[in-house]
Image (cartoon, rainbow, N blue to C red; front, top):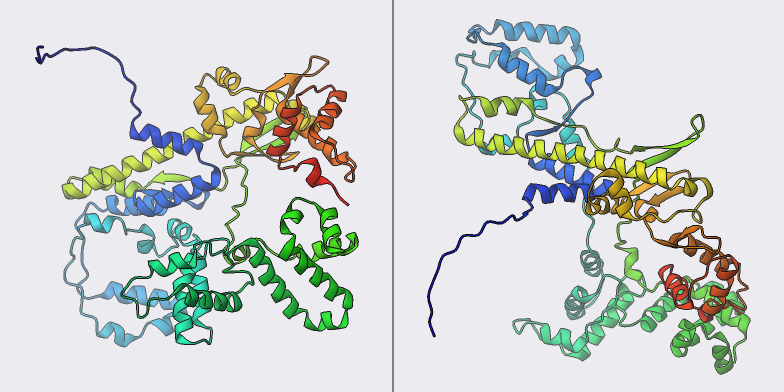
Length: 531
């Protein structure tokens, strides 16, 4: 056996994505709200990027500052006597008598030494990030206003529960036990970690290592004092019973005066304690048979139980339901009998490069380190502006192609869209299909039919009995119509739903009906049945 080394040369082509290209694709894929946040972050971190003001308002502050910096080529003359200062004071007092009376006095100027020297300010790298032309002009800075409008973060669930627990009047040991358990309360309010595990995880350096029995006592105290009711429960049954206890405490007088209300809450407690599984499976007749309750009593108990929450902690820290902001708007032009599309980009600020920093980056009198820093910042600012503009152009082209291909949807509604593969739009626009996919990702259209996800228009389909192309979304809409129109006391099984669709000229298999039903979040026939 022989081992040796050798060198070879190969010529080949390889495609590598540069970091800038990857970031550009991310910009294209971002929905409008995320893009606003990205621009906001860049405005905070990049001093060379600024918000462009309206041209109607005159030259921007950066332009005025640049003119001020470049127009004075002559040496600066210093007034040793301070006469110009007093002239400006007199002029200010004439135009603003109240302000001048409050803010200025002759003694304040008498105490000031005359200006004797003018020192040239050298901008260091750490100063560039905090520079603001508006401070020199005495005007509001649009960039600072945009940064100040960012919402403050809300307190986490653990922080809110700890604040509640700190205000409870309880024994020190119970307070300590509760503080050990609170970090294990999950986002929905449940304590799913066994108390024995929590006890084992308490460090040995603790004042007194608790036993699971002690933690049980602390858990009961948390369930009693924390709000809303149901927090710190270990399972769904315990959570619902805790809320039912709180409801009974709140409605004490009503329960005493109304026997029906007492019976309703008693029936709800009985169902939760012993028949929760039957309830989730909609087996109401079995509950009636085993409990002796009438169907009307069970229905009244269900009405009361609808006021209970399966995730009580969500009331404290609700997931921020971000509003849907349409990326484009489609409107009907009656004169031309066509639909027109345009971008909803009024929320995006008009960005520009700070011309003062652009001038400094070329100024040899500025130290080299600052110029290199400014050049990097200017390059990042230019790249972001180009990426945002490219995103606008690509998205608008894709939206126009969709509007042209899906005229029937805008005319007749959700049951009329045509199959539209992304490859068809990509070939039409001369771009890669991955670019189309990124352009439609998490984007929304505001249409005469409401706000619709842009991806909804890209779907496959099949042929109806008449040979017409029908998209899968149109089939789902037809399936939902059939289910909405069924007799809820005798809901249709998946096989019967397939037969009903066949009568409409849409022949699909039973398993396809089941798949679409699950995708739309529609339960089975047994769970849809009403009694």
